Image (cartoon, rainbow, N blue to C red; front, side):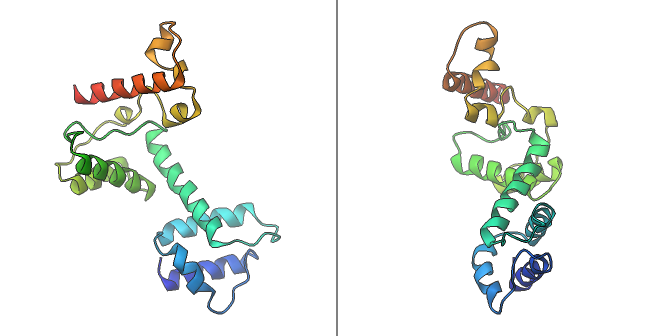
Length: 185
């Protein structure tokens, strides 16, 4: 965001009764909001205004940042449905820089609101490979990140389906290895 966009954001929140605009306030807000896109901040402000209409709680930059993070996560989730995203097999997993660059650019692009094909194109260019388009189903693996983080991974892994009890960590590791094998084969 730039200073003009920050002033507009503060004015919008002021008109909604969620902050009290003061002289020089935009400089303090800009210190923390500068790395963010204005479109994301505006969407975050829209959502904050819609849910905090009582005017009893002041909005601070941290509230906007938290809502921006939620907006971006929801955009990425809308495409991946929470699946653990894996770069295409054209990227050598041992090439950490290319692998990491592809992954970060892909997720950031989805968070920016890009469509799947455009996000793949941006990620491929950033990683230095030819664009690779995969069907959306290929991004939705056997196990989602939320299942891994919650410890409920054992209920979806193949070993659990065969009746073998596994810990959540072991099931998560098995699912990740299966996903990697599927991508590299």
